[in-house]
Length: 280
Image 1 (cartoon, rainbow, N blue to C red):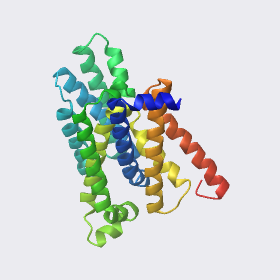
Image 2: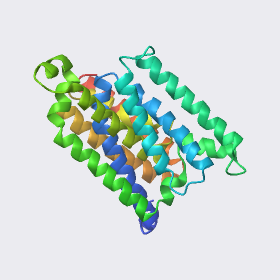
Image 3: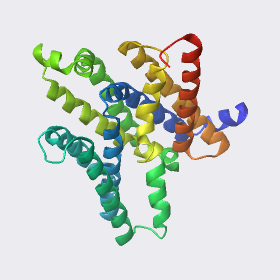
Image 4: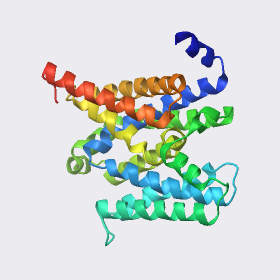
């Protein structure tokens, strides 16, 4: 098995997949803790469906780089959800659910009305649940993912204290002069970027797992925000790496394998939390 892995690592596309997968998992876990604590986990699922609809539009337009459509549309949707969520007649989870289902249906309709290949069902399935596209990345794709991933990490580290304050006590943060709305907006935009990056890794239906599982797993073991964030980042990176390795060796779907490893890690963390008297 080790010899087989070493053999595969000789190929650049395998190394590219591991680099991108680890970076995406790291970024998702950093924001995951905040989203779970703020009960915004569902926004990741909603935006992933928006990204699916945008990807369908890009496919119909036959764009060679679908990021030109998917990224702006997803970021714009995140901004609109945050800014109008409290003022619109349809608020909160209802607004997210409406946009999520609408974008999913619109994307599927477009892919059927304007098919880009003879296997529409296969295209839809690979987009929703991930595909082998993570193993066909070009060097330019890797540089783009690496650049956006490092930008997300840098923003999180730079604004860590503000994000911490807004996450735990928004009222106090506003009273202390922190513009909470702007930081909510920053979080929404970063989440949108992460979702777009993760589309090729796990598919639009499984993206939320990268956000939720590491955060919940870390919360079974630790009680402080800093420790939970660090633990979630480590767990997410390890699970992504193990998931990619297992998928290559066992020839299983990459996205589903990563999520399965995350779910297994969550179960182990729950057990460890109970045995050690943690937060489980």
